Length: 317
Ligand SMILES: NC(=O)c1ccc[n+]([C@@H]2O[C@H](COP(=O)([O-])OP(=O)(O)OC[C@H]3O[C@@H](n4cnc5c(N)ncnc54)[C@H](OP(=O)(O)O)[C@@H]3O)[C@@H](O)[C@H]2O)c1
Image (tube, rainbow, N blue to C red; front, side, top):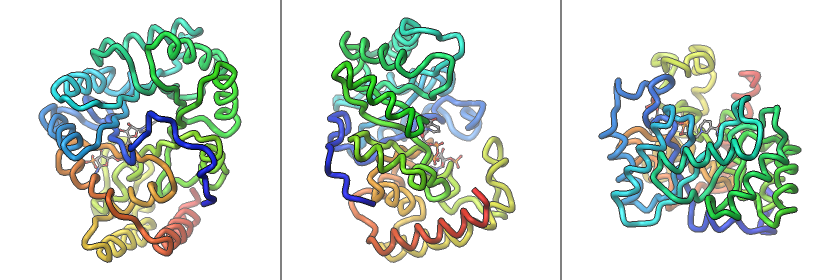
């Protein structure tokens, strides 16, 4: 990657190398909350993160239909360290103006039990409302003191530039763009969005850094994931992915027994993004935190890049 020291990260990311994704917190439909994990597992996951210095949490009003925000808000009240909370506004088709954004924000703040969000992100760039209108609503929320920073998510290069320019006209920086990014999805690297964001000083938050768990080594052609993940990650794709997972395991072994998940997350950090791996238990969060405090060599990053290129080509992704 080119050197991107031209523009510094937004202060909301000061000292943030990694955050925790909370989509699965309270989400019954996609992740099966209440079946094999429950609120006490999530509480333990939160405590483990905070006790280990991870204080950036990503949520959204739609996660668990509000449950994720509610739980996160409850947990935050139990600790006396500052927590950075990032949430998102979903551009439902019935939300047609800036006031609708403000109502959504107030709903999130109420569920979280907070007066102010550290980072508020527009979840998707969907029409009909144009990006300028949403960014104008975001700028008003900053000026009103309801949010500290503005982010977007799933915005392509042109959409990111539009959001950046609209906010700049109000004297506000675009803090982040949250995009899917991992060894099985490198679109933002290939199409130039990642470098463009780095050049603008827009932090890329890498979502699904473990490819929804596929890069942990836990799933294989013999142990397929169920539910919503089974469409993309089936017998064929998991067979093709295996050499990449084997390389993650091998490189991890060379780093005093780091796990495949830790190597996969470290790779996203080496690419100058802030990963937000999802964690539903103390064990998962504890393991993922082990992605910090060490670094892959450039040569290892290259080997992973090449292995991922080969796998992606075979998959046709
Ligand atoms: N902006 C957006 O549109 C968008 C979209 C998706 C996600 N996100 C954000 O990104 C966050 C992370 O994405 P994600 O949850 O989809 O995917 P992910 O972080 O790639 O994978 C998380 C899942 O992998 C498994 N896992 C995590 N750590 C593990 C470990 N150490 N060992 C074994 N298994 C482990 C768990 O599922 P199992 O135990 O069930 O395998 C966990 O729920 C979300 O929580 C959300 O905050 C944003």
